[in-house]
Amino acid sequence: MFQQLYQLLGLSRFRRKILIIFLLFSIMPILFIGFVSKQLADRSLIETYRERNQAQLVNASKLIDRSLEDIVNIQRLILADRSIRHELVRSNEQVYEGDETIGVDTYRNLQRLLSNYLVDQRYVDSVCLFDAFFRSVCHGGSAEREAQTFQTKKWYLDALNENGGELLFAENVLAEEKDTFSYVKSLRNPEEFKLDRIGLLVVTIDKSLLEDVNTSQESDLIVQAEDYTVLDTRTDGGKSDGVDEASLESENYIFDAYTNSASGWKLYSVISEDKLLGQLNNIGAVTLALGGGMSVLLMIVMIPVSRRLSGPLLQVYESAIQLFGWPSNEQKRGLDELKVIDGTFKRVAFQHKQLNERLMEAKLREKEAELKLLQAQINPHFLYNTLSSIYWLAKMKKQSEIAQMAISLSESFKISLNNGKEHIPLQKELEHIRHYITIQNIRFRGKFQYKEEIDDRLLNVEIIKLLLQPLIENAIIHGLEKKESTGRVLLRAFVEGDTLVFQIKDDGVGMEHTSQAMHGFGLKNVHERIQLYYGGKSGLTIASAVNQGTVVTVRLQLRKGEILCFG
Image (cartoon, one colour):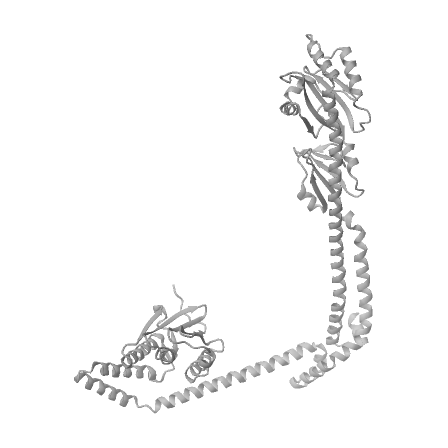
């Protein structure tokens, strides 16, 4: 179907690609902007919600503080009431064997006195007053649990340890009611010096207090006590394992927390992310609709544009077809225009590379021919015989320096000629350098100190001859001869991966501009020889500082199998 449509519109393979690319590059920004806008809007809404929600949590905490403060004040007023204390003291004094209830008169008096403090207290579910023998008087409820068992309960022991202070619990300590919680106060007689315990006061509070302090119409309020008991206004009762914040995050809930300083309880405001962000989903729908409309419009506009843009490249394609002579139109139609052009350029690049390699080989052969011509002009037998005669004449006349110079020069020539071979073991090149240093020290009265730091396992590595000696010569002539004191030259050799590295370091006069040194005949010639033999990644570099010395580094990119394996 698409193929027939392309043929109907007269679109070649390359034009189709241009059209598709333009469509993608035009539509993708729209989709991207829509996506980013949605993300930014989501983030902004969440941040705004969090700021507002945090303020609501603070406000809810203050409302809880006020309500609990009112209840604490009721407890303190009850304890401060002399009549109530008198009735409790009298009840404690009137204890008879088997008597589990407070006397009728005392019960009625305490009921009447308690009712005076519970006017307009909407969140107080009940108030229970116990004497020292756990006999109760309750207003608004009853103590369903066995009062005599209180003394073994943790909440009761905690209340006693508060020494008359109020203690808040996340459960109803008197009954199995899941929609209330308790405030407990141990009553001590302030008129007695020892503050004897005269009873216990338990105020039961309705959980509707927590629902009413939540002013948000969108989120739910969850309260977690200090013992991790959860008072969840959305469910009946609480959980004892605390709020699982990781679970809330994994289930895509957005929540904020605030700790109430008075009670130590932690308030959570929780809302589903889908519920909060649902109003922004229309942004995605608008973005998709806009992307579809743009696709149709761009298709209409870009068909003629793609033809104009692809014209010159298709002419190159036709030329490539003619150049390599594809035999039939059948094959021509099956080819991708860009692949044909790419293949053409690759062939041209390959041919260009081959020509460069041939040119490099020709230059190398030319250099080798020049060197062989120079060597051919030297009669080695005549030269060796002459130097040998000089050596023995010097020996006979006891001229040891002349004898040493003659023998060093003779050995140096032998290594340089190397029987016409272009490569030489590193050990032979080092011997050549030592003979050269010997001759120079005779000339300059021992002015130069030469040192080698070379792993013995590198001594048999083959390198091109006359590679290092010219660099040592350059260090002496340009760095150390001009120095008044003794000069030092250090030669190091080591392997880095597949590269053999040499460093020639001197402490001579140095130079300010190292680029000028590379233009000299000696170093330039060595650098070119290195690149001819070892490739473009090989060569030498120079680092120098005035009056501090010079470091010449040679890197040889060795071929596979030329690097020694040290074991």
